[in-house]
Length: 325
Ligand code: PEP
Ligand code: MG
Image: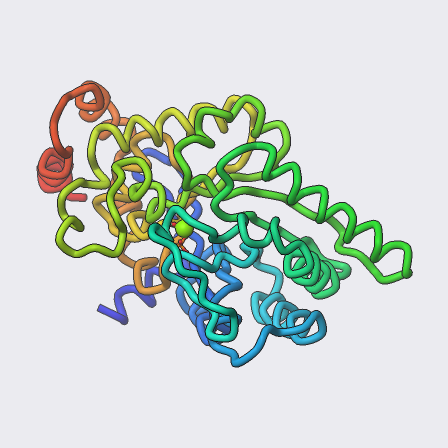
């Protein structure tokens, strides 16, 4: 299998009817970077900066972060890297931060809520990212944004840091692209206000499923209760994809579902053209893409989106089986 995927590396991720699908990789440790080139992925669509924070015994300072982010960009050798700002809290704890007891950590003080409340952490991280990307393009993405005001506030902090770097005469990135994760359903109802303010959006389906269906992502007893291929989820994706097209904002999906070929197939059917997946999924997803006819799938799927079914999984499986996907 490994050899088969190695041969796939240099083949384009294009469907049988000519639709180009970008396949990026999720990463969080320097170690992951080795897979970037061997897998032939288009770049890193999600770099989870909290993973190196979690692996240390104290909060890394600006210099330590700069060094790390620079190494990542160096190793990416010009392929784009989307750096997501610190996404801790919920199920991700920093061993050196005082635990904060909450009844509902998944819905609690986590992610951008922490970094907006503790702006020094955000500022140091953004400063390190700006320094590491001097002379290159930088893509920054904010996690768990629930309302446009949070994005505006985060962006203001970024602008202050850019200004500050310029004032002290430090070289800046040639371009800074700003994006947001879409993992809180409420944000999808603010797209007309949000999309003019961002360069890209990435849907995090792990948290999105959790909040769309009110289902704890870490609870095995309910893990199978709702399906990512539910018509509701597919309609949600179709809506966001259409809005992003309307505003000419790049959209990708970076949650785990994007890495499962059948689910990725459903996402492509409803208009998603960019996926970011764990490295072992790149080969299987690309294989699916290269055997798919999107037009055919969409004409099969369009009418199913309004069905009250629990899931479209079996129908998509049948399609894949009948059409050799
Ligand atoms: C997600 O929620 O889908 C996501 C990509 O972020 P994480 O899994 O790191 O919460
Ligand atoms: Mg998330």
